[in-house]
Image (cartoon, rainbow, N blue to C red):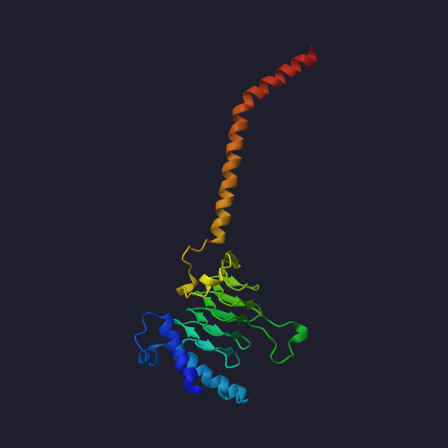
Length: 242
């Protein structure tokens, strides 16, 4: 069982990283794979209630790889951390099969409420469905869900649930690409799309520019009519005096 899981994890890197030339290269040269193997051991110790030992070995793995994965997290098969430096996965995070994270991704938690601070194992971190791709620098925060085969764009901040088979980008992240289950199942590096991924902030700025241009044109139109309006007002005053 252990060797089967190991083989599947290696296959995940070979399938999704064109730079990987073979299984031995993945085993020897990929810090994301090293961090994953360290997590598998630490998670086993955590389940056996060797909490301190599990945390200590996880800390050693963090020092060696620059990737921090809490041993209490749950991670599925063929998990890939590409490049990996700066990745953080919190204690109650749940990650499905065939998920890909890039560097500087955070699956972070939020502070528990005062009423629930004493509850052990309270869900504070995200849940990622099967086949999710998270671009570099993205932050997914809180006990939210990212649906299967969804994509989160680079440097996005996700604080609300993301449906399956969509692309979400921005701060805060918003869905910018409609559902297309067939295309969503195809792997796209860095959570990019073939059609391009519109920036919601840029869209807002463009809308504002359009409104300003329309208002400017209207003001110019009114200014051009001003002499006629003044003449009409004078004629009305003369009529009133008469």
